[in-house]
Structures are given as structure tokens and as C-alpha cells.
Image (cartoon, rainbow, N blue to C red; front, side, top):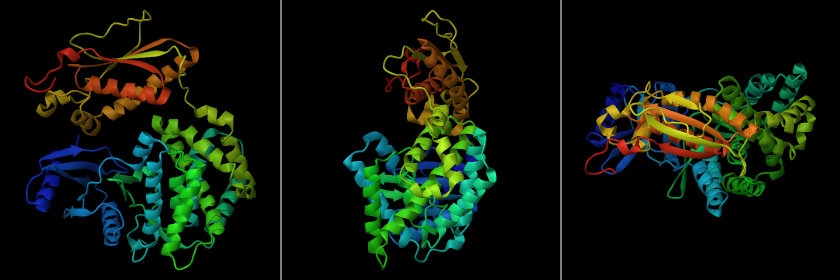
Length: 487
């Protein structure tokens, strides 16, 4: 639940900036850390409000953004900041990231053109953005060097490799880590390093690209950010694209530096940073997935391992570090990857998952399969949007209600727990070739909470397991609607 005091502070800042109160405040999906985002609507125009109690982080983002904007580098403009520096307004870049467009369009010429714009703008941000940058504003270290690389490598060791309980010579691995980090960081020219340059942090508006979430930046080597983007596991860019985009990036670098780049030397360093980035991502997935048991990160592990497996076939320099290469080859073996792979229903799979939303006033839906049982989840412990006038005539399929449930209630935590329980049975049923599973979500009126939960379950199972589903909102005929308007 977002405190009303914060909403009042946002309204006060917007009123001070625009001269009048905002018309509507729309919660947005949460960002990294403790930042909370809102879209402010006013006379058909919008801007983004960010609330964050980490003042140091806000100061860094604002200072970096103002620096880049002064050089016409594509980042959101800062419009206003409150006196406490806990809230700031910024330009609205829309809701479509480069990853969203890739998922919608696939590997199309249009998507390639956007990636090309992104790598060219990255080179500009790194090199021109470096000039005059005050690195004392950095959140952590001012420079990305050997210590940061060792931290990334050890992150993977503790949270992924050691979790698998495979036998290995720990001292030999630490020696290889030390030698590898030293070899990568030798004689690297330093510019601005984005640090988390990936397609989720690249927004697209009117076919122009913009960068967000660069507050973790510092001074560092050019190849690291490029490696992060081109080898992002979720994007799985074709090798041909990677080669062309690498060359497009270097072409731009050559226009910005006084001397042309030694491409063979750059590519060798780039490959080293690709491996570092792939190892670091495994550490993150291990911590979020294997330790915190978050389903999204667990399901991402096979993609990350296959990405690493593919890269190791190309990067022969890793053979200079025998214990490191031994472990990497082990965890990318088919047996290890199979540990994390999710079973996916084929076209002939018999399993049908029946998903219902219902009202407890009307009773739990009957199981028509004849098997009996199935899941029944009670959503009534979650705040009810139906008690709020502006949501009363909407349903759990409408965006304002979805935003409310996602941002101001415990629905996300509830569903994450439900997904973990249901996933276990779906995987078991696919393996045993069972034909039916029923999942029911109930709330008071069968219109808001249970409808949203059923819709999200349907989306989750289709995306993760490709199973056949049958979704029904049992109380839809009785939903409360305005007499003149909806439905």
C-alpha cells in the first residue's frame, strides 16, 4: 500500500512544477532497488514521478542524467526535484523497451536497426559522456577494475557453483579467478561504464532509443557494456547480429576517438568481458533462484547456461585457466542443464489445465473431469479493489485494477507462492501424462482479485509450460457494471 503522504508529496511537487494539480496518478511496475514509479497524467500529457528514500542513489541518477542531457545523449530529462531529494519528476519515455519489441517482432530488420542505434548511442555515451563526468558521484566504486571483477566471479562461486555441491579444488579456482581478472584488466582505456547495459534498460519511443537505470555507472573499459547487451541470455541474439553490431559499435568508436581502435585487441578484451558477464549473471540467478526460490530466476538458469555453453565453444583463451574451464564445462554439460530445464508440453501432450475465477457467494466450481480435487485458492485476504469507487465497475482484466493489485496489495507475493505450488504439480503431471488439472481462484464477488489471479495463472502456465488451458470467469454475468457504459 502506497502511503497517502507520498501521493500528496508527489502532487505538491507536480503542482510546483506545472502550476496546477495533477489529474491522475498511475502506479507503474517496480524498478530496481527501492524505487517506486508513477505516471502522472495531466491534460493528455504525462511524466514519470520516482519516489526513493535512498537519497544518494537519487542524487547520482539526477547528476548523471543532467550531465548526459547537457551533451544531448538520450536519457530522460529531469523536470523537478523536491527539497528532500526523495522525489523527482522525469520525462516519460513510454512503456516499450527494446526487449519488449524484440519479443513482439522477433529478429526482424526493424529490431536489428534499433539494436544498431543502441550500440552507436552507447559508444557516444561512453566516450563523450566520459568527458567532464564527476565520478565522485558514483554509488559504489569510482572505477571498474580487478576488484569488481573478482567480486563478480566470487558471487557466482558462492551462490551458484557451491550450491551445486560439485567437488573441485577451491584454491585452484581462486588462483584462476585472480589470473583471469588480471589478464582482462591489463592496459584497458577507461571511459563511462553503464554497468547494467541490457535491453530492458533501453526504451524506444518513436523509433528513437533512450537509456535508463544508469545510476550504477562508473569509470570502466569500453567492451564490458557491449558484452552485456549482445550476450544477454533473454535476448539470445543470433551470432550474425552480434558480429554486425560489434562492427557497428567499433565504427562509431573510431569516429569519436583520435586514433582508430586495434580491433583484434578490442575483440580479445571484449570476449573476456563476455565471460565475466555470463559468470556474473549465473551468480545473480543462483542467489535469486536457488536461494530466494524466485520462479522467474530459476526458469532463467537454463538459458544462461546454454548461453555460456555456446560462448565457450568460441572463446578458446579460457583454456589458460584449467580449473575455471573445468567447472564451466561441467555446469554447461547436458546433465547439469537438464537439472534446471522446465518440461514443456508438446503438441500431443494430453494435459489440459482448467482455470476458474469464482465468487464464494455462488460456491466453488464443480470439477467436470470426474477426477475430483484440484486447487482452490482464496483471494479474500488481499485488499479488495471493488470497495474503491473508481474500480468498482471494472474487473481484474482492466489495467487500473491490475496496477492497483500489483502496486498496492500483497497480490504479487500471493501469486509467487501459488506459482511455486502449481508448477510442482504441472511438471509432475506432464511427466506422468495426466490429462487434467483444475485451478480455482475465489473472492467475494468474483470480479476483481480472483479474475486477476486467474488471468495471471493462465499467462504463467502458457508461457512457462506451453500447456493447453481453459480459462473461465464463472461470475462474469453478475459483475457490477455502470448502467450506462461498461458492457
